[in-house]
Image 1 (cartoon, rainbow, N blue to C red):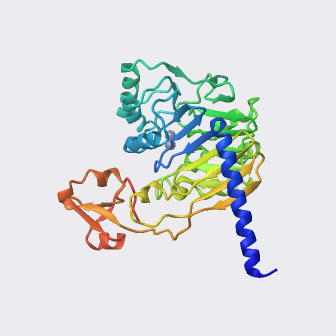
Image 2 (cartoon, protein in one colour):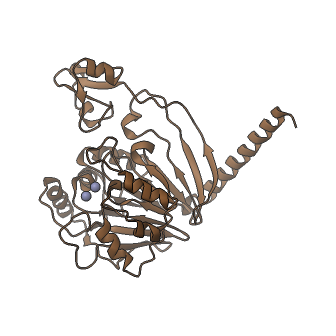
Image 3 (cartoon, rainbow, N blue to C red):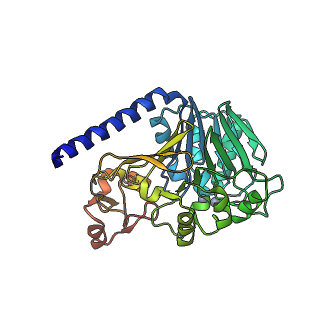
Length: 374
Ligand SMILES: [Zn+2]
Ligand SMILES: [Zn+2]
């Protein structure tokens, strides 16, 4: 066969795969579970959507509130059936303040821990003012969102772990037919050990890795039970904590897990019909989206439950520009990605633009501590 014929045949074959994938998606659209892992820099935020119902788990730091809110609105969310605060740390509950102010919430599920941080007090006051039913999470509960979806609270147990807010994170297992998600919040090894000695079936297709990929979570004995085909780490680019650690990354790789990271992949979306699932990334990390840099690789990979990738489709591909443009203020020495909340506060009259980080640094500017430009 001629080379050009072969190429043509391959194109037809690829097109057929795409058509089948698109029609399958259209037919089962109302019965799909979609779990979004939002890129909120250093912090966590997940949105579950199933048959018109919406659950938000955490919303990053308070700076990220507006970003999470616009993401929700872009995905048709005008009210939340459930809002889960995994634990009172700022990188999880800060953004919930914007959400509670702007979007009606039917129920809050909280870890039952207290914290003196101002954002936690504001969060509690808003729930109180709006009269939103508030429940404390405890191992053994199930959440009745939809009869076809099983949502179990695996942690914290009735007697909380010491006084470590992370260990007492709300841990959820979401199962839709054959496909399951384990969402760890910032829970670490103490919580993992307690789960290992419980009777729960920890085996999960998709793991939201505990504590941003730090070494305080993801022990190898725990990962050996979870056996995740996909591991998702919610983490900020260039964060001050060294997350994720090499130790955790190699432990995840040793289980044969494919790793996705919000600092590298941007928003990560998993869609499932209960039999197989598709992971879509593709956008540049949030920090770059407002820049004029070309779009990075966008891809969707379909997996069957149990872990083998059945088809891979790469759509747009272009070189990723790691630099510029950046924005600064004539009144300060910080430079930001244009999408940074710090950049958006700069009055137009004071705004200065740099084509690259080298340009900004040459003019005496230093990287913003929120958006961490290069
Ligand atoms: Zn955290
Ligand atoms: Zn935490």
